[in-house]
Image (cartoon, rainbow, N blue to C red; front, side, top):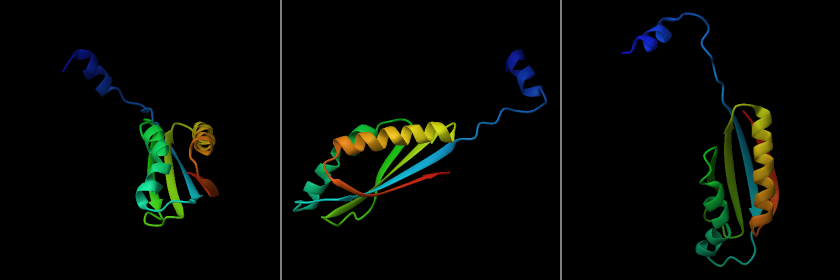
Length: 112
């Protein structure tokens, strides 16, 4: 162990604490014209492909997996402040409305 690391470890005093904030956005969609689950999954390809690869987001279909006329998706966002989370979820919600071809029936948002 280097001398510099020993000094850092031996220092007493308040340690910095980073408290992450989590935001959860749940969207309930109404679908029309889906004849099978494959067609339903195709509607949400952009949702998973675009936002599922973002480092600060987690995306999952959380309900109505076997229903052909509706879907419920949840996006969880992680950040350092509730304001940052709110802004991020606003961006995601707007982009989903523009890119996903399904009517949004209900939106629920929660900051933890």
